[in-house]
Length: 195
Image (tube, rainbow, N blue to C red; front, side):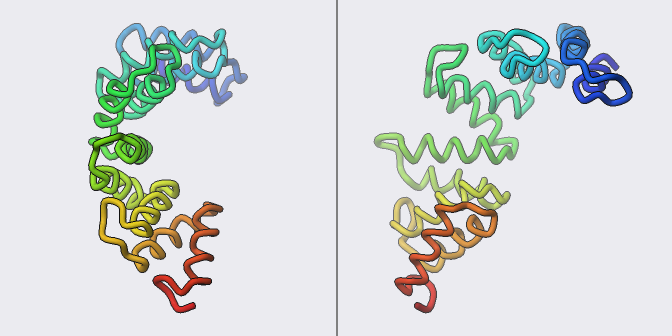
């Protein structure tokens, strides 16, 4: 009930919208171990809604929710490690938290793992392809674009213009400008499609 009251204040649902009121109720629920309240309290510190913006406090609350297996908190915690916000920058910790969320099917975590492996030295590109594909199959446009690039260039997969076109098209249909541009080039050059 406290978490629900926090949401009601956060969104002005049945009560006047009040960020400080939302924080009060989220904190009560979070201190009792409610993962969703811990996550939302982390969001309030990250955005400065109802409390002063404080990355270290956001990390503290997201860690509590992440340790309970809450995927969105795991992703946010990974992003903080990735960017060195509220914690020291640590690629290994970022990957660890991304993987936990990715294993639960979180598309953003899967995409970010793909990026981590795509840019990692000495890491096979096939691992990046694997994570991009999982996120792309959920409709994540940036993962579709990156997967198309892998097929376009033959990184981590056999080069395949038709597959590149397929993934570019899916991302382009969602408004991804880079995918639209690359898809146009595929048509202009007759790669994977008639010229």
